[in-house]
Length: 543
Image (cartoon, rainbow, N blue to C red):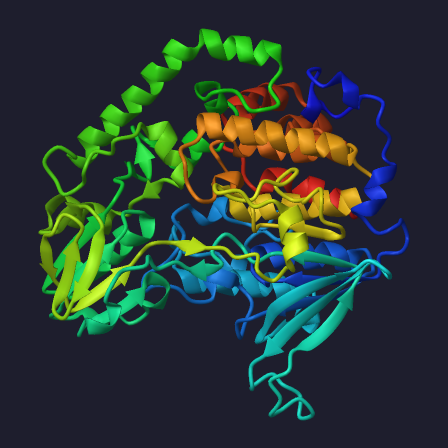
């Protein structure tokens, strides 16, 4: 029995695997696959299915691959060093390696495009095609996928027609990412506002802010980046900037006491400073109970260092109401030097509140205060929709108020021939996580890994729900959040595939040498994990 169900459910031990045939095509019958989205998740998934010999069609609504890296707000870029953002099977090639440790968005997009070209993925990608609906045909156990094309991509025969095109597929994979539809809160009287309203993803020209009074809504990483652009006289040059937020977040510098954020967050030692993962056994749970005082001291010390580093008691940065570990499940804010200096020293007005309604020359908050504005910039994230499914299948998907809960954040155990890669998971190394997810899915389809019956999957999902709701703050995508538990999750995927999760140690044992083994034992515990640690495993899968 897979470890995910632990000993608390002995009634599952005698269940067989025959019901998996309802979830997957019979072995040897998988021929056609439709993948929705050509970002880092969709591309890695396409590569794995092409290696299986499947006919793969990738539907991408944009005019190029790359997802959010194709275009975004002005100044967007990596908030982790590029060495921590790599495809495990295609590390940054020398000619594309950035000179800056934190490259801008276009450099990241060029790398993603190179991945697609290197593995010959472009011929199977249909650009300018937006998926509109999916219909399951139980008689032939296939999906009918309806999509529309932009005028630039339509064939001469389809030109002038608004009717959607259709595809039949044995399997569908949703790779639309966590950033699906821009979310703008419902605010009264938007039509009376004489200024401009924008979601951050459309804030590509900073000159439109010059000399204007800007109100930025939100307090996440994107909001901090946009504030720094707006206040910089060489770039945005806004006359005034007001940051309106509901919840303050802890800023994270790129290093703390000489230790990089990656070294701090991407290792096996950190989970010891957290409540145990939902699959933890009695030993780990007991150790976590004993370590509770140490955990509190660890996080309070980090909060003190951050508070001192940013001068949060005297600057525009407001101290959050929640502790650092809980706040990091929202994603964490890694500030660059420019944002730090502007927030610490610049005249940025910060207001804790929410907008009630627009007036011609500004906004009125729920407490009745007025703020003049010529530009309102919504840095309010993204939302998801599953309305492409009919009501019956949507009900079987069982979307909760705090998100969609899936088996291994991949499989909906009540919906046939469907998976989500990258769409329902968020970690601090998404590009690596998506790659491991795509390998896991192929392993499951080949019945090569450890996969429980559907009833056991349902038990696992319920365990996840209870655990997440106990240890993570409420947010609309809580079912997808892993963040600080990234290493536990990656270990889980590898164990399901029958591989050792201890990649640093495995590399040392494979190479021999006592000194290397000793250093790798230390690195296994305290070293930052990256895509390079999984490169050999990914290639071995196709050896």
